[in-house]
Amino acid sequence: MTSGQADLLTLAAEQGDAEAQYELGVMHLGGRGVAQDDKRAASLFELAADQGHAEAQCYLGVMHLGGHGVARDDKRAAALLKLAADQGRALAQRQLGGMHFSGQGVAQDDKRAAELLKLAADQGDAEAQSYLGVMHMGGRGVAQDHKRASALFKLAADQGHAEAQRQLGRMYRDGRGVAQDHKRAAALFKLAADQGDAEAQRQLGLMHLGGEGVAQDYKRAAELFKLAADQGDADAQCYLGVMHLGGRGVAQDHKRASVLFKLAADQGHAEAQRQLGLMHLGGEGVAQDYKRAAALFKLAADQGDADAQCYLGGMHLGGHGVARDEKRASVLLKLAADQGHALAQCQLGNMAATRHSTSSRGRASTRRCDDGTSPR
Image (cartoon, rainbow, N blue to C red; front, side, top):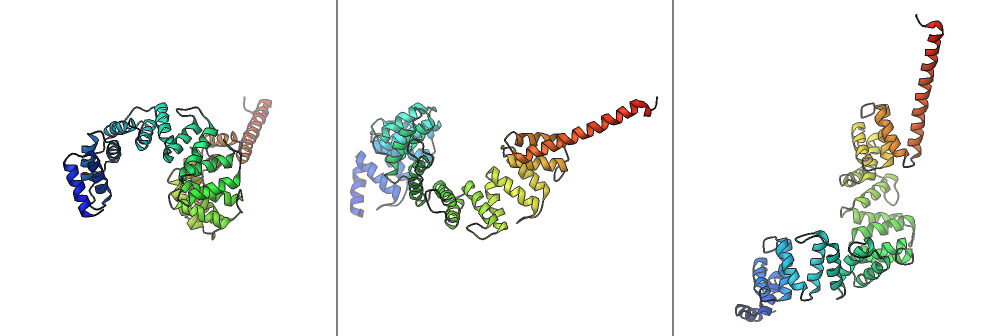
């Protein structure tokens, strides 16, 4: 847009033309033909919104949500978005639906969220279609319906929506709502992965790792895990750490593995906590440190990780890195054994046998004393 056209819009906006106020606000928001200025954009949207301009109401609502150019105000955002939603604006319906879903600025209401998302989805809004698909997957605010979810994900996926492509890929992988088809799943994961979706990169990496729907390719799996790991995906960090431990698809590198496990462990990832604990136990890639190992095993054990419960139980049995405590060891080993952990079951069996043997020797000693060997 030329400066002359911008001047004309400014003149019309100053004369109270709502469309001109809105258009000029959009220009200031993006810095097109005028200086980029969020505050000026917001003030122009406010003028147009006060005249009932739906797009301006929507834009201003979103700005209040993020605190761009105006004070962050979730309630004001919701009020503006409702005005625009009531005029049929899909973006406002979707945004307000999301707010009802999370209870942000409005009462938490899954049913109302679903109604608003459906209004936007019916207008072809890909984000709303994907959102509503997730709600049908979990049965939140709507009936649980995997077929309906898959249909909604497909509508959004066909518009290039990465999350919907990934969600539909998971449905094809698992055979939920659609016929199981690993090749189709892999193709959908790739579409989302190519857009930088970390979870899709990780999922596609897993398929290459196992050769499901794609050729087994450890190197490609590691590349995909790295892409996701670099975005902070804890599962991918852990998977890539395991690959560096064994040298599958990447160079064997225990130090690099320990770094990756720590990144995931710091996010609360139980398997990574356990893996890093094992490295500290054996001094692989990190300094040997029984106390640190025990602390990491405890973090994972508290999340129900059976291996970690077993390892920590063994450490309490031997007093390595923690106080020797047979009672605590027994509790931990039972937790793991109840999950079917064979080594924990074996350890418990050994403890019971030892107690029985000790008890038998004690009873035999008592009998001998009672037979006349003890002082009267």
